Length: 307
Image (cartoon, rainbow, N blue to C red; front, side, top):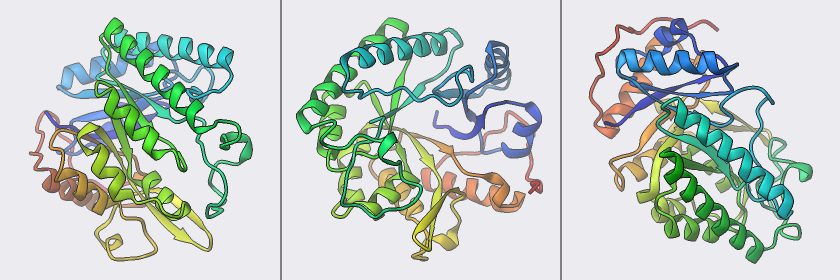
């Protein structure tokens, strides 16, 4: 069954679930939980209420928000990162997660020219093409995906990859996902739009056309551009659709929904920016587009949000 999910980062609580979930929501995505006890609480709550849940790595907050550097050009570091994700996959499997998610490429790969938005990764947190050449990136990608496919089989744990910024290496990213269809793709509507604005010549719709059948999950939020910078993780409102200050989140979702009828949605937005009625309307608009029916296994109702 298709899921509309809410994010529960750092700490799950039944009270927060009741505030945000509403009848259309039938799952959650968690990240950076404080310990295994909290992870057990998520698992047990979801089993009790007939919900699904996935994990955005890292599973636990022991080292903070540490994303594995899955395209490290240094062979020793690359092997260390593979060992790290193996432990993450094993933990997710032990607690019955539907999926575990990592970013790829990470570090992002790009170099000038690009629109220098202040929130883009700086030179210390991305690879340039000199640091990671095309063929080296291709080789690393194939090695990584082969390893992930093996981990997926060994632990019977679904692994999905969310795109980060990839500069001119989009064709390699597409080719690798198509070569390993068992490793599913996660679309982030905000990051896709930022890439469209930041990197000249990048066509988000050609990218989506190639990968739409591979999409397992959409991280759904919007972006507002203002004064040479942007603000992201915004709830997607109807008034954004024809406003050039905002990204094209709804249009992207509409495009992939016409090409894939299986993917799930995580509302990866700051719900404090809207009231309860607006949030309910966002859920209903999304569900109508995806033809998702109301989930009635819990009693959440629209209510005002704090903030």
